[in-house]
Length: 65
Image (tube, rainbow, N blue to C red; front, side):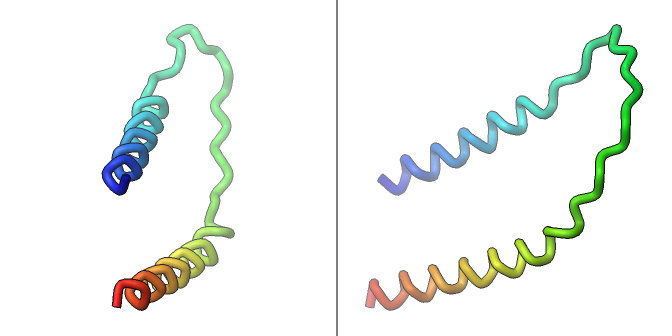
């Protein structure tokens, strides 16, 4: 079951990379607009992710003892 979860995560990441790597159309005459920065949510999500990972790691550690 654990290998199935890892394989599904790997496949989702692989597919998302393959989809985003495609080039645009050669006759595209649309002016490209720069994207907005996403720096507002990066640091809170990073902190929450680290705390959640630490919590789940400790929770798994106490279960296995």
